[in-house]
Structure formats: structure tokens, C-alpha cells
Length: 362
Image (cartoon, rainbow, N blue to C red; front, side, top):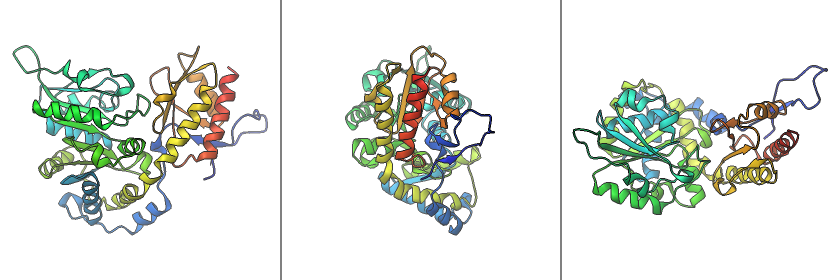
């Protein structure tokens, strides 16, 4: 699709100021497809709080089917889905084991402690791939001195580790050992379809042993709003109460669920295009001597890199923006590109060219 028009400039502006925009900050910037917009306009709706919105009921049933689960619930955001799961799996005063850069740690407003009264016990794992050996080192039984572990929460793909994926063999050991201890395991699968695409397997197989799974219909799947939480029938029934507590009862939500249904059915088929575009960006950047990038971590649609001599990448981000490439950050010193449907191959090639020029001119 064509590049997005950017602000025009006056005649005195430098010729390098962009007239188009390539949006690479996040796949959250994806816009609903024409088919989604048509489905939203025509959606049959009811009151979802009463369980009477037929389109919401349909997307919930389909999500449960695709993931091989008994039930699912539609929620406004991935954060809400994760926090519902944490609330239901734990009791106040317990610990939740998770990776140190996980979304639940850095991007969910300390809600695990504020809402569920739990403490996050973090471990650092290379490339974000948490194994049982990481987990068992920090597990605790409750006693008179320490809080006990109540939940393990994992993330796949791992956003801040560069979109890296964790394979089934790693999970099978975690599921087995956690079950022996009676510990539930929740998956933040915001981009689980990206992970499954990279691993060439179904999301049902990749997530089969988790107690619950949250995944986003937005991001790479392009729905304008919405995430899903899947699990057992009893778990999802209890989740409806917690969703209402958090303000997630959305009444005629079928207008949103209609787009989510298309996201679920159609959009995973094209995710490999985003992955190929991310590799294109990574390979191009890796040719620059100023750039530090581990190309082996570019497994899905996220590219994270640093530029030597720039512990604060703000000047680089500003120059990229002037040239029409909008990038984001991961850690304070890292630049992040995220590929998605609305930035096609020619746009990614142009972004790579501009990025190389900007960095080479530093």
C-alpha cells in the first residue's frame, strides 16, 4: 500500500525533510482492513454483559476452538487479559515468577500488585527464553518469613527481547514440573500467532499446557481493539466477574468483535510477510559498522539494535523522523523497528535505505 502522507514543509525546509511516513514504532499502529470495517458496520449486536451479543459469542467460541480450549472471553486490552489471569490464579501475598523484561513487569502499570496484591519475582533469561532451570531457582514455599510462589507467567514472542520465540520443548518441561508442584502457568501470548508462525506449528499445540492464554487481536492481526483470554469453562466464567470489576463490560461490543473475528480467521496467514520484512531491515542494518545487532534474535516482526556512541538514541530517532521513518525504543539505549501489514516490502526497503543513510552520516 502507499506510504502515509506526512506533514508538508515550507519552501525553506531542507530537501531531506520527508513528505511520507513509514510507521515502524509498533504493530499497534495497524489499521482495520476494508473487510473489517464492513463487518463492523454490519455486525449483529446485543448486550455482552448479559452474554447476549451474538458476534462476541461467535469470536469467543472460535478463539476457544482454535486454541483447543473450553471457553474464551473478549477483553478490551491485553493488559486486562493478563491481569484477570493473575487475579484468578493467585491470592494476595503470593509471588509471580516472570522474566525481567516481561510486559507484565514494565508495561502494565504495577497492576499485579495494585489489583491482585502479588509480588513479581523476576528472572533474567537470555533472549527472553525462560527455562525450568531459571524458574526453579526462585520458587518459594510460603513460610513465616517469605511469600510463596503462586503463578508462573511467560511471554511468547518476547517483545523486549526482540520478538524471540520459545519452543515447545522448553514449555513441555515447564508444564510438567509446574504441574508436579501444583503451580498454574499463564501465557502472555500477545503475539503468539507470530511465534507459532516462526515455529511452523499451530497455536493450539504451542500453548496446550498453559493454564490460561491471553492473545491480542490487534497488533499484527490488525483489529482496531481487543484481546482474548482462553482457558477452562470455569476459569472463563470467573473471568467475566473480574472483567466487570475492571470496567471491561462493553455492552454492544459485537461491533469490535466483528473485526476481531476477521483478525482471528484471516490475518495470521500473512504474518510471515512481516517476519521477512523484519529480516530485511536487520540484514541491511547489520552491514553498518556503527550498528550492534544480533540478527539471530530477529525471528518474528521486531528488530532491536543499538548505535555505537549513542547511549541515548533520541537524536537518531529525530533524524529518522525528519526523513519519514518513525521508530521506537526498547531499553533506553535501543532502537526498535516493528513490521506489520501497513508497512509493505517497498516501504521497508525505503526505511532500510533511510536508516543506513542517517546512521552513516552521524
